[in-house]
Image (tube, rainbow, N blue to C red; front, side, top):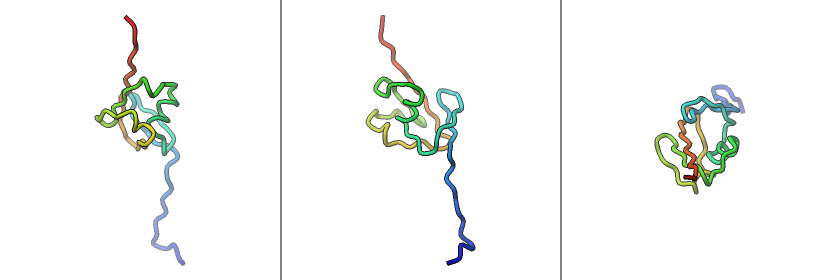
Length: 80
């Protein structure tokens, strides 16, 4: 079978995101939880806004990040 006329796409190895106003490059296929862990953040203590939507923490493992996504990470600190 000939591949003539068929386009072969190669998935990118990395994607670019904007996290708290800073451009970052992460591996393609990264999840929200993976991003948080790569930043040494504890997912249970972070609120994530993903493309203007506040995420439920239960979804952090399932949401794949995509090229151009925008995230705001908010970390609450206790104390008085």
